[in-house]
Image (cartoon, rainbow, N blue to C red; front, side, top):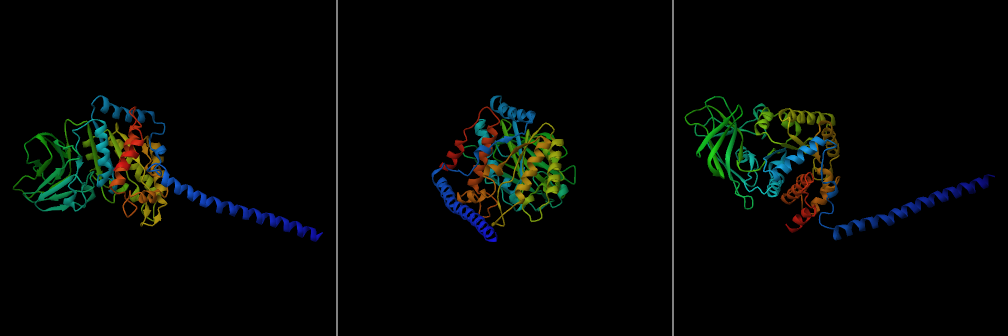
Length: 425
């Protein structure tokens, strides 16, 4: 009896070992096949095969009023010459203006708007930081950084002077054939004296003043402006940013990005909502989360709480504006390791959008999700740090975002255009 049981057990063990060997064999056979399939796909498929075009849309999660509002804003600007004002806030992905600048250009082209210009900006060179390509700043007098966050507005930075001859000159250069001429300048400022009101040295007319800004109509459209502090006084003038617009433009696409910014950075800006209300955009786009998640001590609950507070502040300041949230893109931590916090942060962004009736552009999924930054790198689309994209990558991001916006209208753009633009660059 024992012999029969031993034979039976041996057979069972033999069968079990056989199954394991067979499974290992299947894995060994299929794995090279799968790798070969991926390699062939890279070689034979259309360019940008790793980009998830099927995920490239603006999701409103059933909020019909929000979807209708966004569609109306875009189509009215296109068909009825209505003004479209957009404010895009974020971190270093926004400050350099590669992403937002190309989005601005694509939207202006779609609207057939040849009068568009930069909108809100800041003389980053004066602060010692990197400016957008099309922006040049020069200055006179002794200007110092403002470090007290309570006295900082939507740009996240500010500069101050007590020099009697303090001046800041800003020039905007061409974008392709567009001159970017502006005839209105709104200067965001503060001072320790009611008598200190900055003014352009160009011929101008004062058209509006509030507690946070002063607006001038320039005598003629310009590509540069010099903002001067009144002479013969040692009182302090602080500049928070300048809004350069053309009164004839359909589109004003403002960008306010700050290197290293997190959600909490914007919550600490004492003049954030005041400046946002003064600009009064129809649409606010939030591109934050990368720096929040770029830490080994990421606090999911705190991030969610901060993000909800930011949404609430914007909604209170601009109750009629539509809000679009953009998820943070895939990246590596310290150039080497996948950052597991990015999925956690993006999940909270989408969850907050559903709670507060915001739209979402899920750039993380459009990129290709986890590990996709490596594929973007292989295709020459990101910076060596594998945290930021390069110029080419940000232009692709802008084209994808523009296509997603077009998906809200009846004038849908063929997504193949994005591929062709990228391929022919």
